[in-house]
Every structure is written in C-alpha cells, then in structure tokens.
Amino acid sequence: MQHQSGVLYVVATPIGNLADMVPRAVTVLQMVNVIACEDTRHSARLLQHFSIETPCVAYHDHSDDKRVEALLSRLQAGDDVALISDAGTPLVSDPGYRLVRRVREQGVKVVPVPGACAFVAALSAAGLPSDRFVFEGFLPAKPGARLKQLQSLSAETRTLIFYEAPHRVLDCVQDMVRAFGPEREVVLARELSKAFETIHGAPVAELARWIEADSNQQRGEIVLLVRAACGNDESLDDEVVRTMEVLLAELPLKQAAQLGAKLTGLRKNELYQWALGRQSDKS
Ligand code: SAM
Image 1 (cartoon, rainbow, N blue to C red):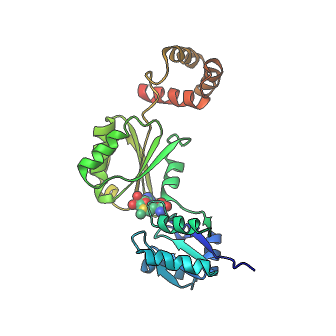
Image 2 (cartoon, rainbow, N blue to C red):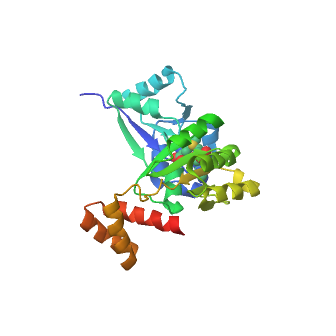
Image 3 (cartoon, helix red, strand yellow):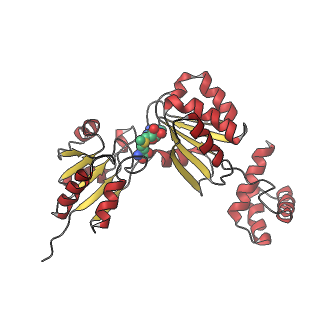
C-alpha cells in the first residue's frame, strides 16, 4: 500500500481580536502534529488562549532550505503540519510562499483554513469600488522609491490597497498627494477589529492634514486604500459620454448605467463607475 502524505494546512489567525479566530482553525491547530509559526513566542499567547498544546517550530521565508526540507520530510512521513503567521492569513505580506510552493511541487496536499485578512476587512468597509482591486502590499520604505512606485500606479483603474507602517504613514500619504493629486479619495483603515479601530476617507490632501494634526493616526496597524483613477471623459469615447450624460440627466445612476450598457454595448459596471467618478468630480 502506498504511504499517505500528511496535509499542510495554511491557517489564518486573528488580526487583533481573538474573537475572530474561526472554530475550524482551533480544531486544525489542535489536531496537527506540528505548527510552523512565523514567531513561536508571538504565537504562544494565541495558542495558550485556545488551549492548543501542539508543538511549534519557527518558519520564515528566510529560513534556510533545511527548515523547508525538514517540514517536507515530516509531511511525506505522514505528519500533518499547520502554518500560521503572526496575524491574519499566511503568505499575505507574511511568510509561507517558499514552503507552500515546495510542498505542492512534491505532490503534498495543501489546505487553506480561511479567516481574517487585514486588506479584505479594510476593503469590505472602506466604501470604495471593490469589484476590481490591486493589493500592493508594503510600498518601498525609501522615499524616492516609494514616490516612484506610487507614480507608476497613478493611472490604475482598479482600487489600490497598501499596507503601511505607522511611522511612515504620513510621509506615504503626502507622497500620494504628489503622485495622485490632492483630490483623489484615500481611506485609512487603522487598528481593524481592535479598540481604536478607525476608518476614515477623504481627498488625500485633506487626509494628510488630518493625520498630521492627530498623532494617534500615526499609531498601530494601517491599511491605505486609494480610489482608482476615476473614469473620466478621457476613458470613454465622446459618443458614449454624450449618451451617458443624456441618460444621467433623466435617470438615477444605476438605471442610467443599465440602459447605457444596452445602448453602447459597454459593461454596466464600467458605466456605473464612470458615472460615480463623474459625480464625485463634480461634488
Ligand atoms: N498576513 C496579514 C494579513 O492577512 O492581513 C498581514 C501581515 S503584514 C506583516 C502586517 C500589516 O498588515 C500591518 O503592517 C498592517 O498594514 C496590516 N494589518 C494587520 N493587522 C491590521 C489591523 N488590525 N488593522 C489594520 N491593518 C492591519
């Protein structure tokens, strides 16, 4: 009989509120033979809270190959392994990629246990278009490289999402003013699921002043979300713009987009977003 490999479970953990731990994550962490943690000391509190006594080993993407191979050997010998990071979903700006890649290459089953993820939580509450978005992770720490990266994203037509360190948030938002212009809407989502949770959106120059005036906004964990370069008259051809203007003069936005889509053959959502952008440009 062929030997059955174990399973690598990739387990999401809370991003600040222990009550967000999903029951399946607890069961899996109790059941596996070993937990690979980004930081064993950091995870000790979480594991203790849920009475999880499974042994832990440290795993980081900078861990040497031996660590990856040791975990792979255990999986191939039939042990189940869980991977967790300090918070949220492993591999999302967190370690795990090398391990998942390697064990999948070797035909070991990898099972995700979904749960908290900071950028998904932020997107779900920011009130920015969420049908298409780009998660950019952390921007470069060096000012020149950060501005360059932001400038390269200035025409992006999907919502942009960044993680940012608190001591860099003001500089970063000020660079966003330079890269995107003062009027672009940016939402700061800070300390999600924790006592000082704050979700605040404003034109970016105004947001920069607000952050500068209140040093509390430069603390804790932060996600920044940027409204896409809005659909403006340059993004639709003149004929479509004229059609939409006539429809919008007579109909609510949603119906105008629906009818506009039928008349022009464009996607309803594209026209809806265009009309939204036009509305916010005017307000
Ligand atoms: N793996 C995590 C996830 O699923 O979101 C992200 C880990 S990354 C090293 C840490 C960054 O995520 C923080 O610097 C911050 O940008 C963001 N983050 C984590 N927890 C957060 C929270 N409670 N509120 C806002 N942002 C958070």
